[in-house]
Amino acid sequence: MKILSVSLAAGLCWSGAAVAGVSESEAARLGQDLTPIGAEMSGNADGSIPAWAGGLTSVPDGVAFVRGHYPDPFTSDAPIATITSANAEEHASLLTDGQRAMLDRYPSYKMDVYETRRTCAFPEAVYDATRANAINGSISDDGRRLSGVALGVPFPIPQSGVELVWNHNLRFRGHKVRRTFASAAPSRTGAFTPIRVQDELVFSYADPTLGSIDELDNVSLKYIQETLSPARRAGQLLLVHETIDPSVAERISWQYTVGRSESNPNVQRTTAVSYDNPQIYSDAMSTADNFDMFSGPPDRYDWTLLGKEEKYIAYNSYRLSSPTLTYGDIVQAGHLNQDHVRYERHRVWAVEATLKPTTRHVYSRRTNYFDEDSWNLASSNLYDARGGLWRVQEAHLMQYYDVPTCFNASDVVYDLIEGRYVVQNLKNEENGIDFAATDLLESQFVPQELRRRVTRR
Image (tube, rainbow, N blue to C red):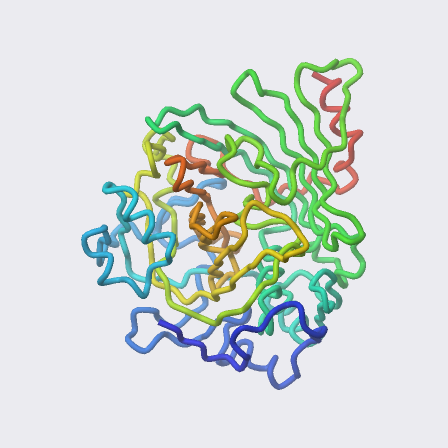
């Protein structure tokens, strides 16, 4: 059901004229009829989506919180509907084409729908910065260069599809973060070996001392990833500088592969972790730019803003993320164990990405659904060169209520042709995520640091 209620022309593409910030009067809507980051404050007509009431901004009462993992504050909730292939038509307007395809492909696939809880919230500093960005932010006519924005949502009142992509890429996820997680790409029979890694990230754009994105050296974040297991991969290192404008420099990456000399480690520059190169540890089930649902520059596509819709998306994914579950409880043949996945009805921005005729990518088209309350890319349908639906991508969103911030606790790419999938960012058997990794310094995120880590072993 289309519920386009914002003042924009449906079908706006990013290939038009440069867009500057909105007027003072338009920006004043933030915190009034719009939430501080630009979602509709009110609920929907039938009340199935409630009004936003501030979200979860602290540890909920009755929750035994231990830093790194997030107990479910909604354990008493029961499903209000269960969708299967038998009753999917009754929910057709609220399902994406990818969800319909999963229901048709796997008789065991289901979607348990729960009460909608608009838990997403962010720090006041992010809200203040978002208000300033709405007025001061601008984007170049080719969608590659941003100016006048910092810390908050770049374009809380979006005028084009590519602005939604930047809202996702630059969404607040903390400043300095350390996390350990696992990925799994099970066989058709469900057999898998989890690949465990540790990430260290500095989100340069989220530096609270940053005055403007213009001050950054074209790099929005930096991260180092070290593989912990299995043994044959342990010790591999990857360093990435996520660039903003690819015409200045594409994603800059360095890699160390185990088996090379540890006394004189050969750290090599690599271009294999961008665009449609196979994503590391995905067993070729996803592309590099599928990481974090979408990452990297948007320059290979035209992004058309279709408007707002209501869809079922995976939300408040505390149960799926619980340390009481093992990876074996979650990962099975064909698809995740859907007993642990919670879906809710939310408003999303729909954006169609169409491959430019002058560029290449294995996905000719991507239909994307961005959560209005967080700007996370929540769901995506991925099409092959012939226009057929090939892969289905899903984020499992969650509010990290102690920070506060809201983004995907895990995400999955289903390959409809192969009958397999890859799931990433599982933390159930790990120490979880540390949003206060203040020991991390941007000066550490250089190739020399990879060499240092190898030689100290």
